[in-house]
Image (tube, rainbow, N blue to C red):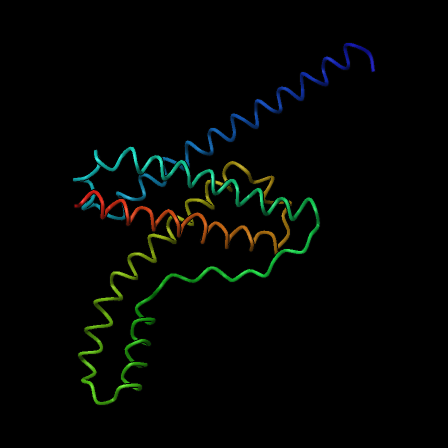
Length: 192
């Protein structure tokens, strides 16, 4: 390899590294703002606390974007090494009204001496909050998957089914679920 070929080789390598860095920054920026906007889209009543929540929420979103990348790195590790993927649990489906009604029927069967309408009222009070929280987590999960797809499609296409399932579970548990939990804690702290 002569000097000119060597120069072009390193130039291409340097250009690739710069492109990867720019792609990573764009991914973080997009996901960070998507997650931030998602909080206020899901809870319009929090807009009154927007100023107090802005910096901590953007910090949380930045950390979640890093965690999403780590989830992708773990899945890619299994792709590169060929190691067997650990057993994964499927991501839970969003809650539906039928889930609440099934819970009511279960309580009615287990406690026949209690008025069924009381069970219905108790279950639905809890369920409405749970369903809203569950949908929030699923919206975060979807935003994370969409951002990864937008910026790292080539990386995702080379993963095998087990590795994609692992990525999906990790994004749900480590990324979306954790972000939602920290948003709830931040909301409580700001409202006090």
